[in-house]
Image (cartoon, rainbow, N blue to C red; front, side, top):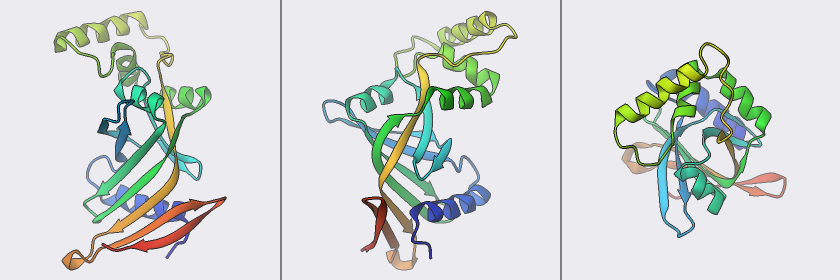
Length: 192
C-alpha cells in the first residue's frame, strides 16, 4: 500500500486506462464564481505529477471566469469499471505559455480550429453559426500551422487534499485521505 498519493494515483490511473471504456482521463471540475455559485463540468486530464493536475480550456469561458474570481477547484475521477474514485482539492494557476503551446500543437487540426471558432460558454444562436465560424477558421489557416489562440491555455490544480475511495461490499467502503503537511503529506482514513 503506497503512502505517496502520487504513486497511488499513478497506479489507479494506469489500471483505469486499461479498463475504463471511454475517457479514463475524464474528471469533474468544480469551481465557484464570485457570488459563491458552484458549477461543475467534465474536463480531460492532460498532464499530472507532484506539481498538479493539468487541463486546457478557453480562458474566456465560464470556468475561466470562476477560476479568476476564486482560484481554487475540486476534481473528481470516477471509474465505474474498477469501482474507484479520487477527489482532489487545491489552488489553481495557469500553466506556462510554453506548456500550453506544446499541448496545443499536439491536438488534432480540427480541435485547433475549433478552439479559434468557439466563444465557449457564450450564447450561440444556432449550430450553423458555429459551423460557419469553423469554416472561416479553416479558410484563414488554409493548410498552414494553427497557432494557439491567445485566449486558450492550461490550468494546473496543485493538490492540498487527495481522497482515494474504493468501493466495498455492503457500503463498507475504504477511504484514504492525504492532506498536505509542509513539504510532505499526512495520511489518514475516513469512515465510509
